[in-house]
Image: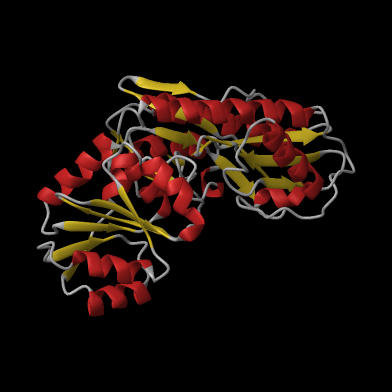
Length: 362
């Protein structure tokens, strides 16, 4: 991607702040501001230094070839160092005239100490500068997220064809993840959640060896990754026949999902969108069983800005991609979550998740 616009936006933010340089250490932020596709993985040793004149990416020999190729024709220079990247960056600051260096929350205490001791400049904490730039997606970003959502839908359709009592949660997770990989996903957007029976009452249950029994609810939360961008979707099905109590809960969650999606529009604070879905569940008698926020932004990371929850006081901008995922969790018994991925529009939202939402009994 052409990241000139992104670099210019960072420099405008610098011009309006007390800092005259920004040290970017969050890997997704590094990927975003450089536009280096397919170069850095989530554990990469990489960072960026941005000033009014300088745009420099730092990494080590493991990423040297691909980083240097990606930088050709861009405003970015690449420094490959066998020394600690922070030490090399501090050397480069000398003679630049920089007096105040902004740093991100991802900077560890030990790295902060190194900068304090070696940089010779003042340090200034920044508050999600790049993360806020990432909220509104460019057309190419939305296309990648939509492609990942489409593959996620295809995966759900595939898994419905193989699910059966007696399978373990682990076997279902392997089937989900291998199908996505075989069909073009770059790994997975996040570790898949496959939670059966009473395990489904745990919103972020880990996959276990539990065998699915007839009549079990099964919550599956997973997403593909295409071109570095994530998808995120949850569906809860019943492997057998659903009880009347389960149907009542499912219907309430589905109504909250629809109400939440209908409340999404550009400029609405996340807390207000969340409240609509939360009130829907409360009116149905299940409000006390919904403990997490309604949604979150999705992009290079599966959880990013904007926040669509009780602490989401900032407006959700048009162009963002967010989840709508109400849930009800009856501790030790069962849970239901229905999660869709939507693109925020000025007057509503467009849904990227196409998998059926009505109750599926298998």
